[in-house]
Structures are given as structure tokens and as C-alpha cells.
Image (cartoon, rainbow, N blue to C red; front, top):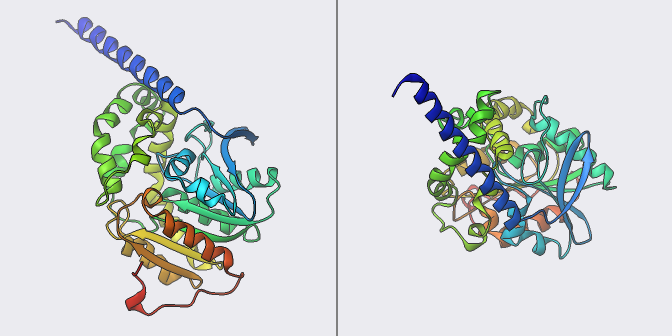
Length: 326
């Protein structure tokens, strides 16, 4: 086989991969179409779910996820029984757009979502973030302390650690080469690694039916692959810059984390942040990273506790021996 034939074969393989990726993406969108509404904010088409009435509760998902993850877990319906729940697809995830030419830091995302809340005539409310969403939630609280009355931070990654997986996952965010990867090879490789990655997210808890119902390829579409890669690349530098501002958060915060979390060690991240925040409460539960799928009771109770706190009133500090009880 000469050089020309090799190039033709490589091109044909990439074309086949492109066709498969886009076919699977369209199938996933038909299986789980957008179930919420759309709004335009600063040139971004944001998809969001809105349910219930009462005090406002904003839900922010983690990396590689979407608002419908909360819906599949049953949390949206449970919380909507006494809150006005607004769950956003962050830019580039789910059905929200992610315009190029912008550096989508947590601060830029926080500012965008605060403008979205303004359009929705939200004067104040609580914010619940999971994983990467916890960083956006804290940025919202810093940018608009009068709007964000309290935080529930679930399975967060708050302090820089050595993460060999981050640079490996960052390829699809690189201009030009990343565009080729995310439309062809990267989604197929991610699909092959899907069982291992999902095991790591849930372990030591079994993967529940609520998560299995979500179409895998919805998370593997090219736009979402690019957004996920960018956030993987930004994760460590983001928390390295943010950690100096944690102590300035003076509002009620409940930190929830799984004792067996393999993505963000509970004591190193949530336990350490709890020691920095004067108005925080730490609750560790048995399980891994994806608490929204197996610790709904604890999450709903945490939201209720934050909602009941008056601004400036700290949570009672438990004895050290009590800090890790469910």
C-alpha cells in the first residue's frame, strides 16, 4: 500500500467515524428531546427546566452532564413540591449553545446565569451545584451575594491535585485538531471507555436505572465533547485561582459528599472547604460521586436546611466526631 492509499484509507475511516458520531447523536436527541424552555442571553441559547412554585432553587449540573440528569434522578419533581426549581443546561451541555471566541470560565458562566435569572425575574434564591457546577455556584454567590441566599454543594472538587486524566481529556478543546477529534475519534473512544468512567463515577454504589435511562450518546455529541474537554483542562487551574476567595463566602452552605467518591476525595475537598467556611455544614454519605442518583433524601433535606437559615446566621458547629455522620 503506497502513501496515497494510506491517506485515502485514513480519510475514509474518519468519514465513517463522522457519520457514526452524528447518526448516534441524532438518535440520542430523538430519544431524549429537550423537555424545558429556551431563552437567549448574551448570544447564548440557554435551555432550562422550570418546575414548581415557591422559593427559587437553581440547579447546576457537573461536567459531561446536563439538567435532565437531575430530572432523570427524580430530584426536579421532588424539589418542585415546595420550590420553584430552575435547572439550567450550562453553555455547551445538554441543549444549550456555547459560542466560540469566549473563554468559558466559571465567572463567565456565573455572570451569564445571573443575567438569565434576571430575565426570569428572580430576585433571590438558593443554588445547588454538583461537581463542576459547585464552582459556578460559588462564583455566582461571589458576584451577586444579594441574589444567592445559600448554597448546596454536592460532590465538589475545590483544591488542586495531580490529575493525570485532565490533560488526556483536553484534546477535543484544542482548536482545529480538537474539532477533527470531537467529530470523529473522541466520541467513539469515549463510548468504549464509558463503562469504566461510569463505574468510577458511581463506585462503590451500583449504577442505578435512573442513570441508565439517559442516552449515552447525548453526552458524546461533538458540542458537548468540546465543552467537557475544555472544563477538564480548566479544572485544576480554576480551583487554584478560586481557593483564595473561599473564606469570603458569608452565606449558609451545606456540603454533601460521598465517602467513597473516586472523582473528588470527600475529606480533601468537602472536608477542607467546610473548615474554611464559617457558615457551613458538612454531611458525608455512603457512596460515590453521583449523589443525585442515590442520595435524594439527603439532598432535599440539605436544601431545606439552607432555606431555613437566615443570612448571617451560622450553622451550629458539630463535634469533630459527628462531622461525618449521615
